[in-house]
Image 1 (spheres, rainbow, N blue to C red):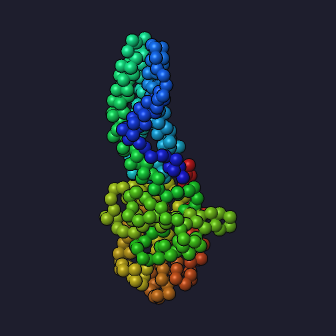
Image 2: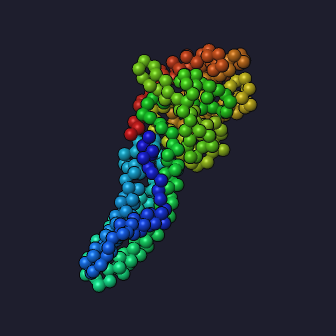
Length: 323
């Protein structure tokens, strides 16, 4: 997963405490006598602190993925979560701070070597470093918040994908479990109230990905916030189709007119091919506007639905691949 390598982003105070403690420890127990040893001691303390701050800030920038190399899908999702422009600006300020602290250390090395009061010069350098770290405190807090959200994203891969939609309790999770042959992985989108189920199955040597996205595709468009709408739009970048499941028996708790309204809304707003399946065939003989009839309880019609979905994927023009 591309976001797993992003470590916790420390605060300014945490980094300063680490840098200054290491600087003090570098000289602990050493005998400092005479001007030359005093100069070297203060120079070493300052360089130790500066290197720790500069290196740690540089690592923060490097561990965030390059936006130029993010897939269109993940780029849109990151934009929903954090705002790509805001993220770029914060990372740019962290990079600036890393370079500036390195520059301060170079300047003050020269001053220490020429000074009669190297301790005072070193303290001045520490003060400037602390000031720079204070100026990026908000950026560090923001980046850690973003980091925590990005690490919760599901691992959506570059594979043919079936996005399962429909009201709650119509059989979406049962369908995903039945065709993947195992309990699907549950991952969280930061802008959904429930985990996203991700399952896989292999047919004729090809691996297919199945996504059940509760909180995104199981309620009317009018009930969604802007982030959810953008997340739905991001799915257009996948090589995907939608499998919309109806429950004509209405045992799910939702009337057919509401289920059909949601189906038409997704068709209108979700730019992917759609197959409509009517579930719970074992509970009713009601005809519906479905392309396929099935029962996830008995398994009847499920294989037929999968065959139709695979055929649709094979006929679909492949979108831009994930990175």
